[in-house]
Image (cartoon, rainbow, N blue to C red; front, side, top):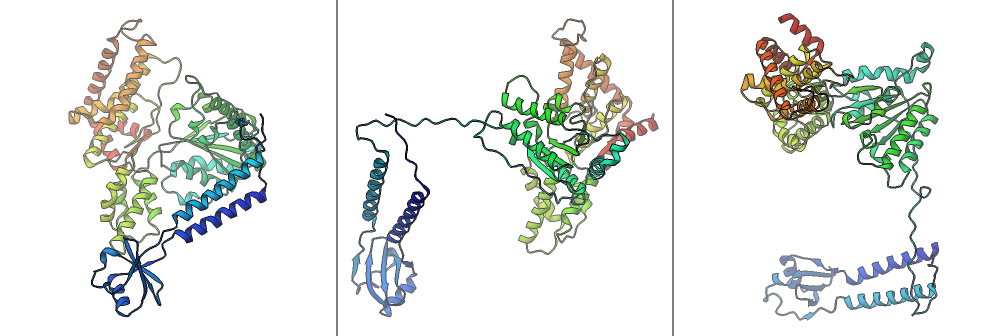
Length: 553
């Protein structure tokens, strides 16, 4: 038998809710223990002053009904028998739980009767379960895409001089688009900010919107991945349509790799549909639309090639961990409102590997420690005391001790020498990071791939020449070198024979390592000079490295 489930109107729901509230209040008044707890001294005074009108006990507590203070209670174990020997203490009555169960039994019976009469069926009639429909695309939740007005300025962000220069052109375009149109030039449609977590990619995008004084549309890549089929693509379309209505505008997609991963392998139709819609939208708006898409990612290697090609995200800006000078600028921003007596440059030198977020946490922890110690100014001692606390709370940030720093300087100096010697493309190499472009040109010549392998082995070779060992930070370089050698032997036929042999990988890797080690040993003077520069400035540009090498050779 098909039945119609009852639909309660608004008045019935309000009446039911009101009744529930009244029941809860009545039960609270009925069941709550209203006696105020008193101390033994207070109870003694009440008894000695003849303030007790009635006394009763429930075993755990003894209650006194007083003339002026109402009902008070004290733990029975605290009362000496001599104090209450002249009082008649009666057992306390029931606590109301019987009324509680009776009350709810009546309410439950009335509710069941009302529900049954509303349904209108006989006792022996089986109830058919209602069919629950899965939500369709039309029923899926819709989004209301609205822009925000960014209040973050470049002046609020320290240590981003290089990034700021790259983005000033975008800001000028959004302010004066006609200047570029009349010259026949077009701005990049997409700007991809690449860097580790915590370096301020989101703040940089907000600063661009604020400096250009345009609407800012923020979305995270994860927000496009929906459980409803087609909903992710719909959200992408809504986002771009809203931006077009508010042009000139900036669309910022944070963690874009969540939706822009390489296609193939494990199939995800919903994510691929969303990515296809994003690609279509970025191709769909004209060069004169006044829309710039800025995206951020921690891992550019996993992104789909179609998203990175020219005409989409054709400008990439790498936001690296700050150097000592940049950390000093960031610390100046965070400390300007905090009373302090310290050398900010000293704090900057002791925070190798800290990003902007961890520097903010360090300053805040130092300020809190200063307040706990009731001091009026933050000192270097406060930073030294909380550094470990911040360090171990930031898992993916490499913090270097003095000994680790010496190893890291030597390791990176070896890589700088190799990358400069073989003239591989890079802008700068820092103490904690390097951006050496992997070989991508086709066809790749054998000596070009070998040069890249040598660079990835150079840090290990340089460390062994100086210290006789190397650190675990070589794992990434060693993994890249192994992948390149494997491809040379098994994919490109560049081993001892065209057909691959298992021992060819070991022989090729050993030969390239020995050659790199001998080259570094012959030019130890250049490597040592790179160490000195890296130790002082924590970065070396390619132009400086070439000039230094040419000066010594």
